[in-house]
Image (tube, rainbow, N blue to C red; front, side, top):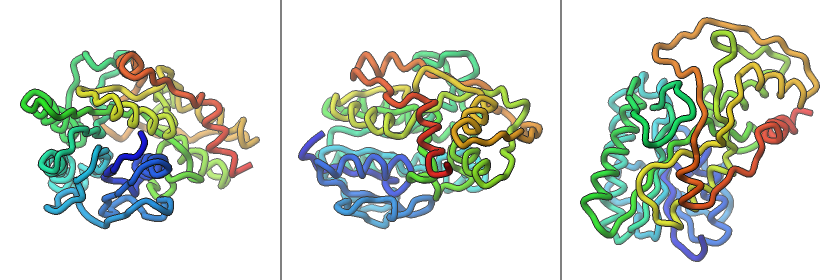
Length: 303
């Protein structure tokens, strides 16, 4: 993407700031973020930052493309603030699309979630999904609204991205997320500090860990192709939490035995692995960061 004016909502957060910083090399980028879980310190010089909410009436939507990543992005956030979560995740989505469409923007890419899948692997976009938490309900609402926009309007493309387990590490733009950071980053920081990581259950649950740089490339390719519908963004490989700790030990040179605690959540997702063939066939996208290399990148500052 070159020479475009682009809006990134939630652009001071983890994925959003990585996207904005990548795009600003060749585009005019404006970021909207209410700083609920983001910080403008994540952003490069040249990115235009606006402290605003996606619920506001006067958003800078006179752009060529919108990347809508703003959300209360975990089940815990929605459980703590269910009304706010529904407003931001659903009403905010509609508000941004409506304003962008009114301003002539016809390319819209938004964040959904892979947590709507069950444990039947691999997870593909054509299988049945369910909302077992408020967070999942809010993201499925986005997908239903996107279906409406794509069906009702002939001149707009709205594409959803079902992110799998996105990571980068605390040396990147993830540290500010704290307890909401990816488990790889949390485990690595604890091991490096001499603390013991806590794993739920027996540590055999798996995640499809995808590096944020690969996620950024996927988002850009989806916008460039003006796609609609929903797309998995994952590596098609999964690792158990026990394996993650072993890789961190190997990278840092430690020998940590995790603590194990009972799973405290209902409807906990135990297994995860994407089928990313739809995205690959539509855009040619492939993940470039092998997970073992990614763990070494996360752990490099601790060596």
